[in-house]
Image (cartoon, rainbow, N blue to C red; front, side, top):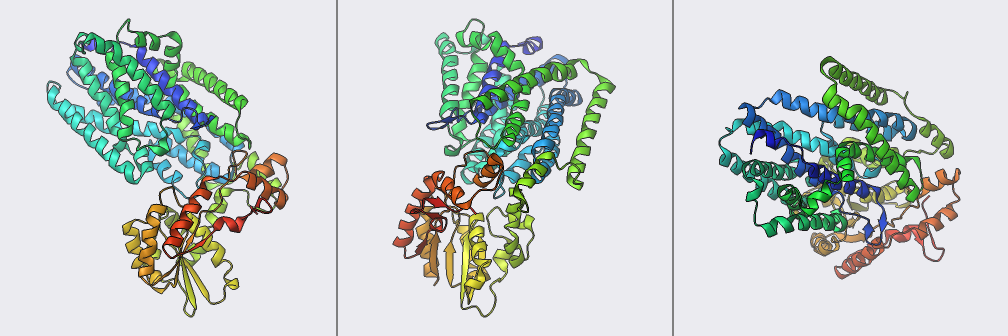
Length: 616
């Protein structure tokens, strides 16, 4: 195939982009359905984008080498800057205005940090750590969370063109073999990483590289073999239809929380995307459908749609304390389309093709300067604490209105006891800290020492005991960070710690996941074999808020007054989730079967007779 043919525009690719971006948008709406959310696998649209990106970028690079005999890395990065930056800067600038009016101080501070992460293309790293913090605010109200995928792509394209440049253009088989090896290695690593940390695998460029490399390998094959040599007629007829069906079923049925993504479970989506690109040909039914004017139109807007939809949805959720309904969804989608179309025609296309030289560089520099000033002011002053903060503060009176600030304050007792700073404790992500491992924190002279084990939920239980120590004369309390899976490494660190040696009673009090009861019994047996009395503290009651914020905040902001505790308790009781109660029943059975005492954390909050759960 000639270099000129390699650069020819293919309408059906914009149609595939349309499918990808629409699935992502619907997924982020979180429309309730009997099985969870409608299109709960819509996040796979990002994986489709990765395949398309690898395919198109590799075609461009190889076509340039075929036509000129070389590849200009500087020109490549300039093209990437023209493609990515103007539209991204526009969205971030608009988001700054909305953030001023709608965000609380801690939210605004986090948003400022996320701007730096987005512009530095390390959003994937930033959000991995930020969303992993205990008590972290929902990702659905983080306006720039979606820029993690841009970071993955740009990190890939810092390395990939250099690899292509190192291998002579005529060494086709060598290049293909290297890319295939890297693809398999990345897929294997993604599968392994997903098993112990799905969040890490989700945001890791190593775990995502195979999806981009799949598109790259397809581009090499696409340039080498003509469309007539792509299999028998029956396969060319059936493969696109099967591929479209696979994409639809995956996006409707796959649940991110239930599959090893982005590992083997993502493979059907990647293969289906490759099949649509490979078998597309004029006159074929799926190709014609993907090339329809509405599909092409959405596909051309796909980058703008992707950039705009998430901040619009996030700010929409921040602007209202009520759960969104059909009207909200309609407004959000309308704003997304209007902003995307205006941004595409006024900024994205113009800066990509028309604005040149000094004007381009000056415009980018000006936008970056404004954003830099915004971040600096937010980080160093209180000048941009917006109207929402003052309005909400009036409702709460002397009470702290910022849940993130309250979360940080809840670590203060442990910080005092352990002599560690907040960053150290939170960065441990529920695992043992250095002080947990090596420091004795039980005081001399106590009659009975109680060591609470677990993550942030154990921290909360420890706080209740520690802050009321006067009611427990002769008892000492401490806490050891351990995740609910009770890994062998963390158990061994626990057994070697001085607090464990001094402890008389062990209270196991994390937030238990669905399968943790399976290993709990073994853990109890080990603790008892080491001479410890063991108690198992069940999961706390959990509630589904009627709105987008916790129930207390929803009531205050919805009714513009602080609630009567009895009324709030009734609302909480009616909103209680059933799953934690089922898990608690399993935990009680395991605890009693292995000789441990079971303590119901839920019973401390909820009164069945009064049909209320205390939230204050």
